[in-house]
Image (cartoon, rainbow, N blue to C red):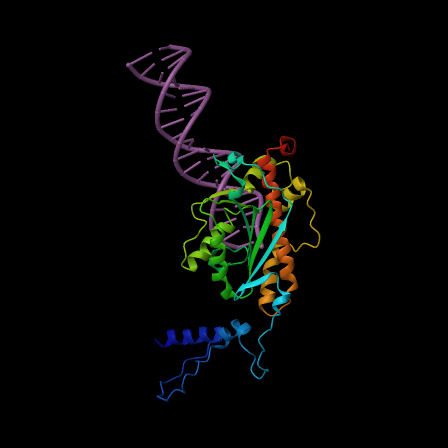
Length: 288
DNA sequence: GTTCCGGCGTACTTCCACAG
DNA sequence: CTGTGGAAGTACGCCGGAAC
């Protein structure tokens, strides 16, 4: 037993865990005092703990006017915009997406998320959901951005109210990425996912079927450049979006959030443009 | 009648590309 | 880095026709 105990003590020392008190001395515990964390755990949580002796960290004050959009709930911003481009597609048969149905454009619900990473699973969350549709003669974009972790529930709630029961989802790789991610977030909020059971046009696959081999790859950025002649200027690469938001959460500037919003907005409009090309069935353009 | 072979459809597996 | 859809490849069963 002693050898095992010694080994355990050694392992604890290596891990930096303080040995437990040698004997349970029955001293009256100070009222409601939080137990001290082992050093290594405290280090891991350092981001949330104040360095001893340092002045109390002041809560970062964010000027709401510096954030994108308007505040519609605690920790939740809404940005709305309208544009003439992309034009609304005509009613079209969605055979190109292997959906044997004629789709009325008013049912189309384009969406794209910005997330904290690509790792997937429950650790990744969407901090922005962008939605596009054709409404009252123009292309409408609505973006939900959470500015606190607690804002997520309100964001999902709001997003769910936007979905018509007959909506046809449109995304780029959304069947594999955005939709499962949102489903997980809804599940964690103990809510039924409103995306469940809806038709879904994932444009990645029609694009691949048509231009695989002809283009260097079939990423959205490539598709928008080849098909729509979109050249992004001052665009924040998608891979930098997580850092932009996490940086803001840690008290960083709000400017990168505007860049993320612009990036997401361009994704939505490109999605609309590519969909229009497929829906309009312009063979001269669709040819490789 | 039996065997062999090719064509076809289905089921399954593997691999790749894409999302921030 | 992860999860997913879909393309591509492979295996298998079934069927019909030809050859013996």
